[in-house]
Length: 223
Image (cartoon, rainbow, N blue to C red):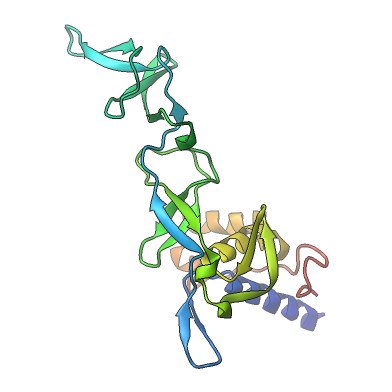
């Protein structure tokens, strides 16, 4: 029983390392390389949370006698330099608009730079933030050497990966985490470290368990 449990933990640890995106891989020929990216990230200019429509959004047209801003409906053509507002619960909220339907923000479509040191980009799953810089990915797996070929192509969420990369490892982590760890337990562990400020317990002092495989026969490594 103990042997089986330890074996399961070893599989979980091995899986965690296989999803690391900021490590260096040592090859049999004595060379080493950082995990590559499958493409190039470029800043998306003019991204907005909604499409501009005349007569729907407001602009500041002046100040009243009390020095407060006066808002009026905009019926003019879209102007990228104009600040637009939407009326919600009697409050005017600054809103990033676009006149290009291909530049409307969608979750899971654009990337944000999470780690500048290691150039790690992650898909944005949050609501649009006009103070955030968003990137698009121009994918080109052919630019990665054949030494990074996966044993077999892997599909995650409609994207097929043929080579090991930062993007492949991120997708692997997101799609397979529940195979090895109890998500509720991990969330509870994180909240405990936040509430009690046990930040060392997220790194060198981390003490959490996989509690064995979460799904029977999820892959060939699970016992």
